[in-house]
Image (spheres, rainbow, N blue to C red):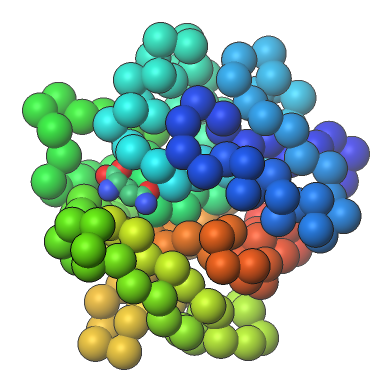
Length: 192
Ligand code: GLN
């Protein structure tokens, strides 16, 4: 891997993602411009607020470049709001909310309720050799999986992680619990 991993740093918990890569000894940089986007080997779209990330991406003239880069095969990993940004279809979005897309799924925003309904769980994750410690914070749920592959489900069967080609999307935040396994999987299987 010659180029660094980029973390979209418009809003949300991008710093925690940068810290995960630093723990793993992997070079990672913030992405706020189209030029910076052009210099990365993979992109993380962090958790935060998908409506804000979408609006800021437009203001920073990053919306179309990111959409095109993902469609052209840039390895991309979205967590929580980042998953929402990667879904082809969403429910519970605000009027006119747009996504970068790439995952052939429907994602329901705030599917677990409000902030008080945040919780943590240990879940099996296809491709990670241990139970993943996951924090769900105003998390979305993947309500319809079409051509994407399911990577993780809650014990009740709700889908919380999928992958498709160059894209990995998860509804929780491993980066806030010191859980580095999913980032390692992203590096190993998607960025290579
Ligand atoms: N509910 C937020 C959204 O719709 C996502 C929450 C999160 O990223 N922790 O964007």
